[in-house]
Amino acid sequence: MSDTPSTIETGNTYPKGFGWDDSAELHKCEDGGGLFHRFKTIRRGTVAQLIAFVMGLPEDKQDDYAIQKDGDHTLRIGEIRRLSRRDDFPAQ
Image (cartoon, rainbow, N blue to C red; front, side, top):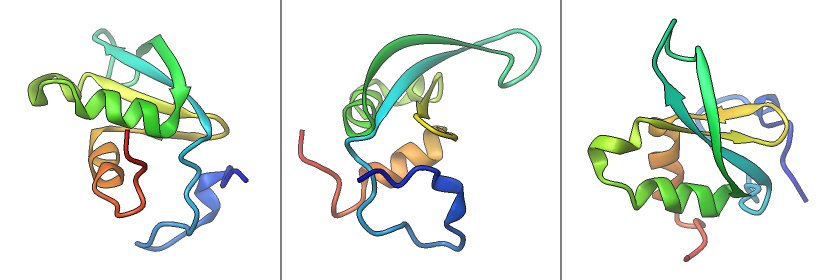
């Protein structure tokens, strides 16, 4: 079952049973008019697949990407890195 919407949870702990299999889109952040001015969708998959993809990129390129989780949440590189280090992150 999905944990969407993800913004209901508060505090510094992750919800149990994070929705690794929830669908998501990978966006390339493009310059021009601010940090979130334009996003270009370049890939679709599960949250876990897209996190693994971003973490497989060279470290200096990782910040160029964001993951839009179906529902209401955009994962930027800090959160992507934290999620990739979780004990329950699915092996790819």
